[in-house]
Length: 286
Image (tube, rainbow, N blue to C red; front, side, top):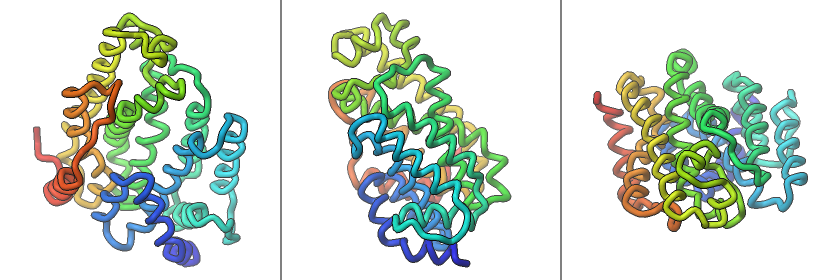
């Protein structure tokens, strides 16, 4: 009961944090049942916090200290508050829904990569990163919504998370290149005829464009696999997967205009329409 009260008590602050930092997930959470919404927003606020550590804290080592603070939040037992609304809501959500702490620990471990400028070694490493971050978040949200049904859709969550995360990385390509980060795997870059160093410096030319096309194709591969299985999703789990309603549209935009130079955007109306349609009808059989 105390956990539920902590979620409610910090609800407005957590909701505002998600609305500001991750508007697509904020909108998707609004389609969840009212009694599940606070827990979903706590998960999404936590994700926004750890995904944004590099933007708020300058230097990898202070960033690692911050991630360690979140590890301590997740690991702690008991009702003692931290004074941090998202941390308190997250701890309450974990306790109230019996969520596996190991999933959060893996998310935090994966986010260490964000703090440094090391290139992503391979497609396999990229998919592992996506699995520990976006896919894990989807599966945790599914466990909140329907703990009985969620385990049966873990593989679908993996596909969905890879599609969503790779699309998100493509959306952030201009920012990542400006600060010297390369999430495009080195083996994909090599196959396209360039290197991580050339890619982040904007020296890859046509090879860099080919690498982006390959990344879009990889995102679509996972999205197609998700959409093939998505019609079987029960209504109870739809809100956890609902951000995928926007992924197809983002990829379409990026195919029409280079993701290297500008960030693809969807209109407010377009996002609301896609989310509403999929919330009401789900994913129709392909």
